[in-house]
Length: 310
Image (cartoon, rainbow, N blue to C red; front, side, top):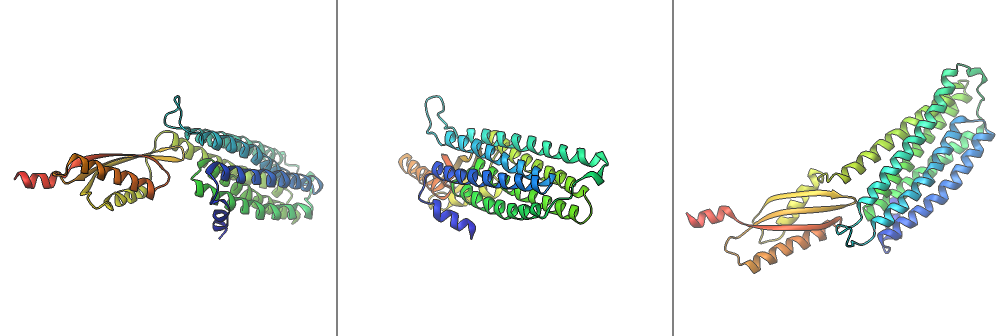
């Protein structure tokens, strides 16, 4: 339902406009939320909430990276970049992963230092305000995850999807903070520091997933097998195609390049064979909007050719 609402709002905008709209909303929300959580952490004496505030503040920087990456990736092909600039969006995702990883390490180090100190009796008991802030953060960040995810799927943006998962990691870290603060108030002060370690783990996991996805798209990894199967089925929907001899795909940023070899009647004229190839090309790009280019090679239907020759 949330995703549908996003699609309704952005369907009439260009990909770059969608990304900019979502990013601006994200920046405004994260600045407001990080200030609120920081103040709550200070006044309620919660280290976990202060750590969570730092995580939200890092979202602002990461969103700016996404805005830059998506803007550059959306530029048209030029003489120096005949295949476009889509991979620069992957660079933005890599930068985001690094920022996330560094943030997580810093938060984890602070919590670990408190735990190994052994002076648990000296740790402050967080106030109720910290619990309220954690609850608000969970709701807001989960909404931001669905909002950003819906837009990322709409425009097929890896960097925007990475930012969505950044929001989800923030929501999960707030759950960790909530548990830690609650445990601390129940008489276990070390739980607040332990929550920082839990937050660190969630952040590092999100950073790794974002990093791996960006690397896969930069090294020409093929599409998932189920996507390739759907492409083969789409090719066969063109009536005069007798078979698919071979199909290769490669991810190029948020786009896909396809090379397919089709079999057609060996008696077809060159003009008709070319027409069939164009129909396959157009159909693939129509069914799969994320396909930037489709190269079609025509082979004679060898089975029928052998029957004729026999």
